[in-house]
Amino acid sequence: MITVAGYTLDEGLHYDPDNNLWVERISADAVRIGFDPLGAETTGDVVAVSFPATGTAIEVGGPLATIEAAKFVGPMPSPVSGVVSAVNDDVALAPGTVNTDPLGTWLVTLDGVPAGDFDRLVSGEDAIREWFGEAVDRFREQGVIAE
Amino acid sequence: MTALRVIDTGEVGALRSQALWHGLAQAMTPGADPVLSFCRPADPYVGIGYHRRLDEVDRAACARLGLPVLRRQIGGGPVYLDSDQLFFQLSLPASSAPAGVGRIYDELLGPAITALRELGVEAEMAGANDIVAGGRKISGTGAGQIGDGVVVVGNVMFAFPFERMAEVLQLPDESMRADCLDLMRSHLGTLPHVDESALKESLARAYGAALGRTVQPDRLRPDEETAVGRWETRLNDPDWLTGPTLPPARGRQVKIRAGTFIYDGAAEGVSVRVRVEDGTIRAARVTDPSMNGSAQRLAEALLGASARHAELAERLDGFEHDGERVLSALTPGLVVR
Image (cartoon, rainbow over the protein chains, first blue to last red):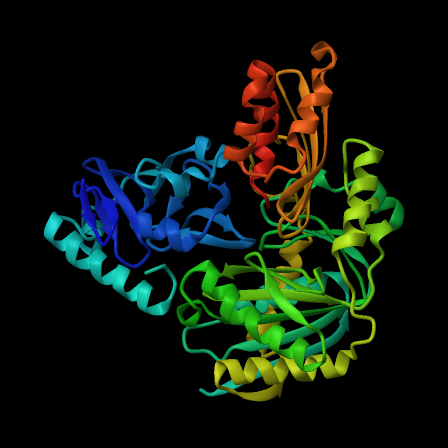
């Protein structure tokens, strides 16, 4: 684990720089996906999560889940393409775990992820530190998160 | 692009009053002008949020009263809607929406407060997204991302039939309905003296100023009409009304406004009902035939407590296993939706 700008991250994960999601490669073409700590914070206190059916094909940017926080309902955009192989029903029962334990809370697993989809993700400690530090600075400048 | 398009559809049917803003958000593209839209439902109906169970609504009562039920793609519980309410919505491209849910509400409901204040209503924000005046909620709001658009919606109630609202809720018993009605009367407010035309003009001015854009009255474009039509079809679809797959219900909560709600739950044979106002438990009832008198003491221990897990755990600590059971029954209700 590493700490960047006060947030704990797992340097062994890949990260979606646009949507603050983590992506864990669990086999050559399968991944598990959740919110990174900044994504969880900016999403707000999550009160409901719903999922597509297993077997659903998802494109990059397509909805992996539908998230509700403070009466805002929006999609969790997929960082990679693939087919939904499992959803975390425990999160549907206790959505607040997205906020309290973002790195420990996976939402969806996808199979059949093309290798090329990982190219746009951030990985490796140095790259994660640089990207995440800039993301935190940007959100703080915008007043989205506390100093 | 420097315009704020203002589209006022006037009085429309129930379906269109919801499909309008779903379609406007859906039709948004990066760089498009934001749209402030207004409508007023000609006929009463019941709306329900995306992640809420249909069984929170008394469908038999709705059928008896001739009220359609429509599910929206934003959050919030069941709500009675009718022609005594003005709906306003701001739709803008997701790419130009403020980052973070908190900022979305701060920046996109702020102009609504400015507009109300211009008309002499001492409006202010409460919680994440309630607009209150004189301690009463005067506007229900919600938001969502639909396609490439973000939409923030609100209503202003010129009058509100509290009894009808209570009537369409599916509740465990009539005493909870009476409590809901009482809380609504105490915590919701209407603006009977606000002129609708003046309010719309004020809202358009405030949103135009906040977004740095020139107000431009407009009509739906053909692509927007198409998107609205598609949403009318979707909102009318029984599968859509059924809603997404949700986990089993754990208790019944009715939120009246930020920090004010009623919760009825049960666990391990104990039933608990609390009435929470401004974050504090003002009434509590604990029911369990096996408790032999301690139920009343448990209920009294809850009174005056903040509706937060840590404080409730402390208050119930001395009751050992009975306290744990009460806490277990209460816990799902502490997430206020």
